[in-house]
Length: 275
Length: 257
Image (cartoon, rainbow over all chains, first blue to last red; front, side, top):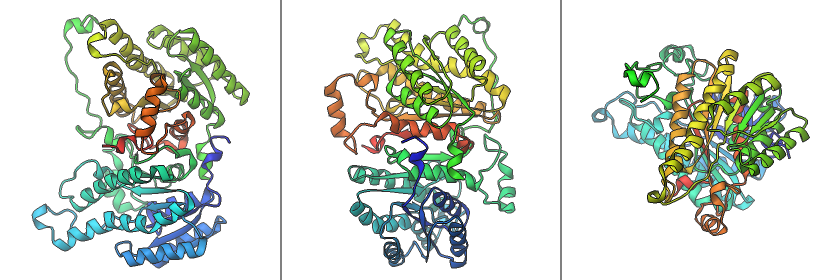
């Protein structure tokens, strides 16, 4: 089989949380293009209906399940309806997350409720989805879990606590998934998207068009598609517990402004290549 | 169509270290994805030359263009003329894969300064030389992909691995520095972190292999072609926004305590 054929996902079923917009929608559509049927889960019915329309336009099936991932009962019901409809779950893409309550506050001002909402949305939600889906993957003989972390899972942020903590938590949660299920053919990995404004002009403005990103631009939603297909496919069969960060080079630097290059006066010997 | 974005048709690649298992798998995967591929050895050892020639045969068998070159990857002149030959014979250079693999393991007190220098010259300086030589055509094209194959020794130490560990960590941070330096020139620079893989030079004896099998989360080593998939992704138009990263393909080995 040629290397490109291994990317095909025909006959597979992918559950995508947060599939109603932005990266979740882009990744759901990419998975569908590669051959997957999709279970589109998100809070807002109208948004996932729209995603489902696009999936069906491409000739794949799509089940729409309004879901609150912070509610374990809602997650369990979503996975049950996925199994009732398609009989299997091959790929679980835990994309939902991002709670903004309490963001921009220093620690001493964060309420209990803001803390728990942030951790529940980004970390507990992924745990609930994994807990519900993994038994089906084990029964089938394997599966792929893709969790979505962030550069803020690897680095800190000023006045950014629930998001950084939960995204960092996801990284080690995923490593433990890898340790636990590697022998049973479940691979769990992470995507870390950089700054993706989802075509929202206000966000482009807020991030100054990505001027400070080493590559000089922001991410485009559709760029997450191929990466997600790679992680869902047989091409990534030995990748487990690992992160694929698509972010224009920010994590390679970060200690100094983009483009900063000190000019150190060289000793005469060094200039002659004799140092 | 999302899968079309992985196609490398019309692109040309150069893989240095094609005599090793991972390098060879990268060559085959790049050619399968549609690229023309030139292959080169890490050293001028006869064994490597034979392996590089058979690797080039696989490229031709896939109906792609390419050639095999026997070089010393630590030689500035060898690397420079290799890159010029790629441009002359294949027309351009889109993808450079540095899979330099000079295996070496010894207790540190027994490592002579000459041995140390040779390991660093090939495995680290060799990568610098290749990147520097490839930069000329890539900068003038305004596009390029550099993919450095590294190992777990980037992140973890290993008994008797002092020189390799130092070289590998050097390649990783060279990758980050070059990614930033060329971030606005259309050249991306990434690393593939290969886990313990069948056929790796450093895993010559059966005993160390068996020990690793038991230790790894999935209880098996990687097959070389499992490392090559990410090389195709990184080389493709789909990975335009990926730079300065190491993507680990190591079966969860780094998740281990």
